[in-house]
Image 1 (cartoon, rainbow, N blue to C red):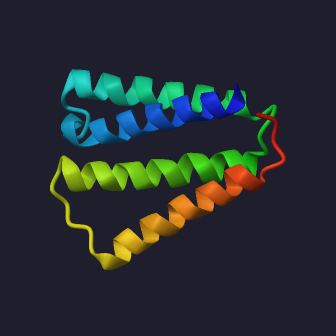
Image 2 (cartoon, rainbow, N blue to C red):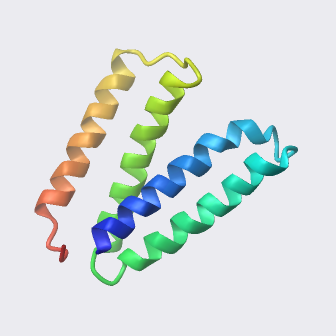
Length: 108
């Protein structure tokens, strides 16, 4: 269950961060509500992982996967350019997350 909670935390954070641009400085209610609720859910589910996954591992996976997904969303939705350096960085982040997951002593 802790890895499922971590996946939910990542999804919530990605949804919240994706909605930030639409808030236009928190001037629009619904996107702002998505941001606040998304981050609240992200931190709640991240806290549920702490009994089984070391904080360094859970935070590294949460932030790494979130960063990679947000970069991809920026590329697809907002047409933000990703150069070779950015793509290489994202590949390294994903590789690091896989190593952390596969080598973690945390219970599944």
